[in-house]
Length: 300
Image (cartoon, rainbow, N blue to C red; front, side, top):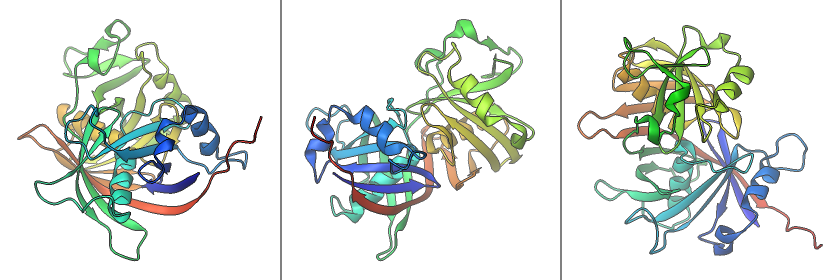
């Protein structure tokens, strides 16, 4: 089985090209494969935050007009939902492999990511280089607790601070951008015990589908630092959908402007939450690292 390792700001995935090998999309063991191939520690895996399988969209796609369908699985084999970094890589690979023309104004590459629409607006991929610069339209955020989802019986709304809730001793803003996020603003995120505070939020009973935790430190109204704990993957060097959640949470709480730079350990993303149409625009790098062959399972 051919695979490609690629990343956006160090948020790395193993990509399976089901355009070239359609049978990859139908593999019944994808959750188990994600666990094995993502393993960073045993020496038996490639090492990644999960796997991403993409194919040409079919007539029954949940996103009308989609060009490609995308499935994202976390390193633990669970449904990864949305991933801005992974979606940028899919756009880059689709253009580089000649599966579609580069996007143009009014003619985006449309991705169906687990039923969530993502428009690839721009792919700048210079010949002879492994990296590209990619812009996505991530759609509109969801703020209704029921659809994030958050169980309101386990959180306490702060009546004097709109959109903020107390949970597990933290003040959070909840946002869904194709997957659920809890954004926690802190004076200094370096003091956050990510290995303790992250999983405590991820698995709190308030979140029936678990949640991604974003710890954010505002540097000024156009600049914010973030550390991420992703459900099913743990600490990651970057999170594209998390950056979307942070810009939305920052605007809602009057901490950030609608255009801001989100800085993560792996690098920075340029973000805009447009007032005119409520859509989130994400711009950042994507890079192909290497390709290889994953051995077939041994006969029983």
